[in-house]
Amino acid sequence: MKFITPILSLAGSMSEDHKQSAIIREGELEKAFGKAKPRILSGMRPTGKLHIGHFAGALEPWVKLQNIAENFHLIADYHVLTTKLDTSDIAQNTIDMAIDWIAFGIDPEKSPIFRQSKVKEHTELFLVFSMLITKARLERNPAVKEQVRDLGIGEGMTFGHLGYPVLQAADILLYKGDLVPVGEDQVPHVEMTREFARDFNNHYANVFPIPRAYLSETPRLPGTDGKRMSKSIGNTILLSDTPDDTWKKMKTAVTDPQKVRRNDPGRPEICLVYGYHGKWNPLEVKDIHDGCSSGALGCVDCKKRVTDKINDSFAPQRQKRIELAGDQNAVLKIIEQGEVRAHDEAGKTMSEVRSAMKFG
Ligand code: TRP
Image (tube, rainbow, N blue to C red; front, side, top):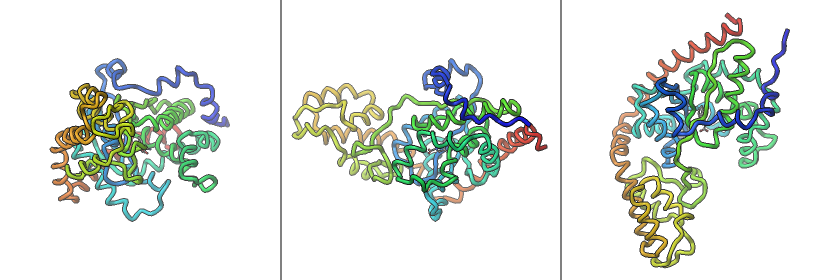
């Protein structure tokens, strides 16, 4: 009997070139796929209502891709367990996230939305993949190292948490995802998914495509305090915030500390509010830059202008959000319909996997 060479052995020898191709950027899509419709698989852990960082970094790219690709959107509820065993809010968080997805442009008729925990093939493929990878390779994953440091867990990491990327690889490959639109921090997970696909294909049969991470051009937006945007820090603007809430939060945003008085010249390059203008007010961005640097534009006015742009651009989606939130049973039904389609796809792939492995 021939033993599988652990994927680990491939990882260290990957050339730079090889690594490059794990990523595809917004502008390169057409060249890569031409007329063929790529399959998209992406998802988020359901942590509740989404903020503008989720929108700019993930949701908006998903919505754009929906017209040229075939999207599947995963609610990664089992993944929540890796850092939080308390599941009392999981059902509500799932609904809240799905409402944001739909209100801000995911069309569930085109793009199924489904829970990981309801499509049992995820756990089945997770088990198979868990046999293809060494513990050492998992421990080398930079995302895991970061969490060990940030959460201070060290030796306390569970088996499931260490296996986070194994489940994520199963999520992606069950749907034969070609493209995984995610933030830059997720690229190591996609690289590992590629290793799983290659390793399985080499050892059994050619079942899986080799997926690539898709990165949009929007730079990461910092929170209103200038730090990484995160709900737990409370430095976010939520998609579900009212125009008033949006303004209240924007008013407190940190700006250039050297711009003390209204007419002091500021440095837009270091100001997070200027970054928000880049995203929501692209036509006036030069004007804002000039006004800030000359001292003609004060921070309060500058913040007001970007707040108005955000509120205007979100108005229809926020309205739709309110309507959806009024009928949460209907939202659950939409998810359940997505699960029928997801299960269909996942079932087909899993039969290919089983027959490639001679499990019949
Ligand atoms: N790890 C992702 C996050 O933290 C969530 C996720 C789980 C995911 N499975 C996925 C993303 C598959 C893309 C594809 O946001």
